[in-house]
Length: 162
Image (cartoon, rainbow, N blue to C red; front, side):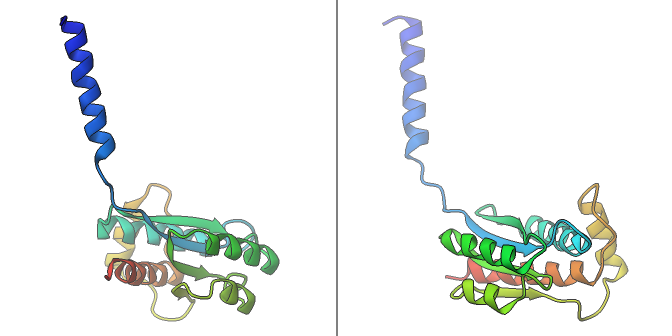
């Protein structure tokens, strides 16, 4: 057998071995928020904070699925129905009035829903510094950032529980 044939055989064996490896399924956490229009700052605060929480948790089998609510209740409802169709979505973070509407919540029935509200304490200096350092274009964090960060941590705990 020639050297070329031997290398080809070895390469094929490696491919077969790699193909047999089982990877853990990806668990998605959906973020339904406004990313366009006058309330986009809310969505982007939640997005960057959720990315930061996910990076700090270091759970490679989890990912964030950011979805624009469309700026209207009917489009938020359509997107909620689409989220519900994806069996890999294990939790949903809801941000903004359109995403928090009752029809949207009903469409997502059966999934853990975590509300990112405008209530609570503003982010402290330590959080603000970590948040701004986490991404080059991260906006100045608001109350939505700290609440989304906490909601994302809670979602990650929910999906990692047996």
